[in-house]
Image (cartoon, rainbow, N blue to C red; front, side, top):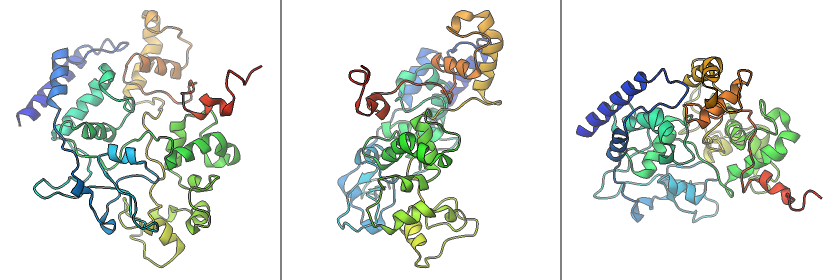
Length: 373
């Protein structure tokens, strides 16, 4: 289409401009003109119709899960999904689920990752390689240079841009009241002290995003938490804390991807099948966090930029790197490049300031006003 051709041409122009100023590695270099930027932004916009009421009238036994365990109503609807509480208190159907097709409208698109050749893919590639670096004000604070293609796709889908459908998974900034938020707070401020072996590579100074990432990979942490996340006496509470669903990597539950190495699990009436498969507890308690820190490694574009800054930039252009010297650490240089809008994520292990609303910021009830006398 004409739009796809325009996007391809603009991307080519941006790439050419980037190559022409590659020598200016120490500073962010404009990859396209302001006119090209504006055209790319405008041409990627599209209209997205809101969900009709009957699209969310899906029977409980036909619902397809669209959220993580304990997702909030606001987060569910932000993903473009339906939210309906259970009619029967004992129901195990998802309360956050994909919409159904509506008569007279195209069938609701299933989640999928965009691929090369699609308008959505072209717009996202430009956003990831140029837009987020040169115009971060265009994007929400949940996106950064280390965000995945799926994270950008989710943003474009929620904004009705570039014809993007919802990805099957993307990052999510958990909020107070969500199960994941409670688990991550407990893990950082209590769990790591009581069960340090559950948190390899982390310290009490690690960020909440780092804890969220680890909890996502180990559901047991959520069920070891005190107080428990399930009702007292729930048989799955003890099962998940002691055994968990690691066995589903070999014998997968219905709908689980990737499939198990030994095929599908059989409904044998066991507590394990009830908890992991029927109640879908094989799914991560936490979604992937947004803006997860990552220290640059050899092969990364950021790593090359850091090396240049340390070996050449700080010596020839010291004014670009305030408070840094040739003896500063690679993490300090990476953090500085991130502030300079270079394509570098925030490095892990750096000090950070407590954010308002966090448990640390509140001081556990005592702050600057009455905590020091």
